[in-house]
Image (cartoon, rainbow, N blue to C red):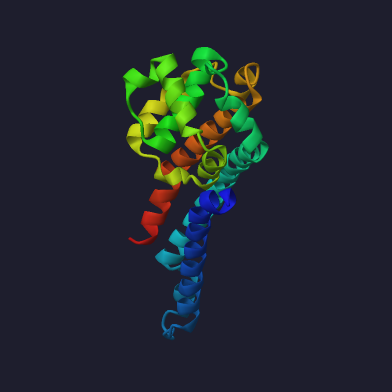
Length: 212
């Protein structure tokens, strides 16, 4: 499921580029070539063919990056289970205190669309809200599995950037010292964020260029 959600847009881009190239090549081969300029017609590649080749090359590069993020996110979600989430929500306070809170508040941002900084900065209230989010552990896990990284808004990215890109404590190795469940949720957050940046900054422009 995660593979389809993360890589499908890139695969569609690659297919469109390949189809465009094939169509251009076929048109070039079937075009009538005048006796006066047969060599020139064959030697000058059609602009659309060049464009399709460039898009295909770029798409392949971005596909590799997206697959790396996808694999990491998939590994994190596959490690999680209902029992682990049930155990996590049973704690009176979030394991890892502030660092653990950053992980779960990221889920509030992405899953619940809760943008209240006042709530996110209040450890007790934030954890209480997170426990409600995990009230049904199976449903919470399913939401992680089905989440579409390309749907993250720029406002949500702004809220997550500081912790994902600049916080040295917001990583699997640091958070696992407090909770392996939290560490894998953090791994999911980090890689869903990475995927979104690849999609928004690289994939979407490539797809748009195909329509020009």
